[in-house]
Amino acid sequence: MDSWAVPANAERFTGRVEAYRRYRSRYPRDIIPLLITRCGLAPSSVIADIGAGTGMLAEQFLAHGNQVLAIEPNPEMRAALGELASQYARLSSLAGTAEQTGLPDQSVDFIAVGRAFHWFDHSRCRPEFLRILRPRGWILIAGLGPRRGSEPVEMDYERLLEAHGVDYAAHRNRYAIGNRVRKFFGNDEVEKAEFRGREDLSYQELEGRMLSLSVTPRPDDPRFRAFQQALQAYFEQYQVNGRIELPTNCKVYFGQLR
Image 1 (cartoon, rainbow, N blue to C red):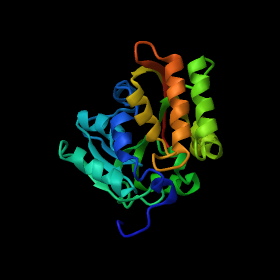
Image 2: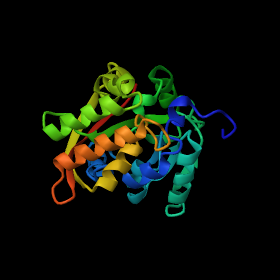
Image 3: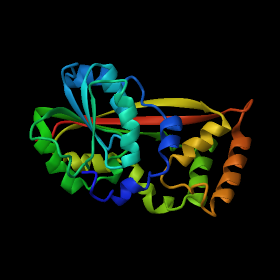
Image 4: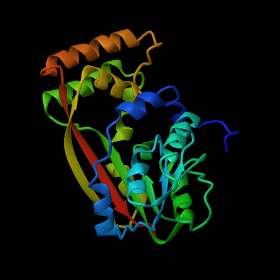
């Protein structure tokens, strides 16, 4: 599949992979125990991680002993997955999309989707998920990012992106995936778990986190300097001893399609 054009949504992350790998939030370790208890996840379960990125969600399954088939359309992201595969023999990195995974029929027990579901064509990936899942297979969809709430540090983070994000306003509603997930599952039951946390970041870590987002100006963008100045002012307003504390939220949806 390397010969086909990278989908536009995946291309948004070209040039951002190193910042993504170094600075993006990691998923809470509560996810695996949740899936063991509620979905019967076992080390023998085969996982398809769709839109796998640099492998942050995949790594949790790999540490549990699972075989993971990481489907990722962006070549730079797949290169990062290749480095992870050098640590985990049970990881395979494959070129593909949510709508066309390239996996055989009924070949996986779980489909896992991290911070990618909002970019999928849901009407096309739903039948693809049904095709590759084994009978009684499970789907996990996890969203993770800064919490949207009423704390000033949360509200000003949102205002900063609205003012300086390249196309944040056009995509903002994508990130609230709850309604999209429920529509995706339709009449099939979907359950939800939520894990709240707080992250303690230096300015370098905060800027790296922001540069990993597809909606922020890159350093070679004429708009970057104004964005960077606004980010520095935001950091100075909320930092304590050179660190800023950001509230985070991980929402996990899991269910079965019939």
